[in-house]
Length: 469
Image 1 (spheres, rainbow, N blue to C red):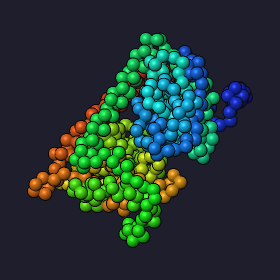
Image 2: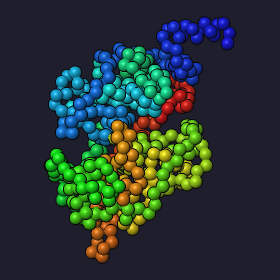
Image 3: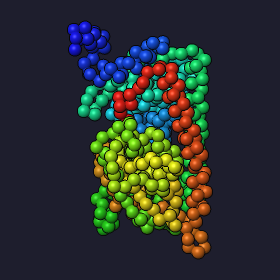
Image 4: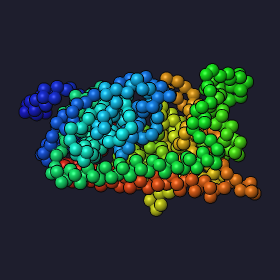
């Protein structure tokens, strides 16, 4: 390197007051320079401040939802994980103001996600989420969020991280210095409105999943409040019963879980062990590469009915088996994601291959008894998640759901008079929920269109290898 190059590098380091080489990656610097050429404004001019959430005092009976990293998605604050705090957290200092930009701020692959909140629900953030109330219009706020979610924006956010060994942090003060491309008001209005329309459609589609769950509740004759009303303090668990399940944790036989299982069994529910033909574990690719031909479905991707293949990472390699239409994928690890499921879709004429990652189980089911989509929908409902939570093992955030535990999950089924499963009833429930899938597909199309707009406007190639997903 010549003396002039060393001098320039020294000037950059001195100006940024940083020593991490990733911050000065030429691929990242080229995009930053292109943003500046377009005309930009620092984020600090567009928000009133920035702070991290706190350490919540969780309360299962609380009414104020906690926004965690896993909740922050492109066009919504996901309903899971659902953790709450009590009214003592209800203060202006604790609550997220309406019209706030939220950015996840810790963890490789999870840091740098963003969403702008315009809702009315009382929310508070945990310490992994940065809150930045907007000082601009709603459409400009949506425009800012759309940029941060684009490849260029996400790259520039992740560039700000500090730390190493997967313990990375993006600090509020660093976020405030982020440069936001600032086109004409007409362009910002158009982009912001597209983002808001997609977010509103996704929010509206939530009711379709709730309606599908309500149809199952009606068949069983139970509601969530009925189960939560069952007393749980204290309870006894007989050692013989625990031994039968090879368990030592008393939560395995908690009264509320027992009441739920009894209600499902009384209506002809079956254990998953009778519905599954085969369970296999996912694979661990040697590396990930955005240009790879093989999709890798990781735990963050697993959801139903809004499963989106375009969010999956990619790799190269040859694997012993690949995912097929109707495979049911179930997360086996992770606080908030454990037990979440999806049904793998039909890829049509695509020659695309996909595999599940090592923390995901792949189930083949007996389709004469149960539809894969119905099973995934039920496992994602409160009735399914309560069962998987009771069956998990481990502690201190290192929970696991092993394939052997699947046999204990009870699934509600409706039957014809001849004793065969009523698959039409299952399909009707799936059809109710599929409005969510349609909204998710439409929002994914909107996301790609917005990414394309920013790509054309900034007019600088973004190397996806600089963005860990």
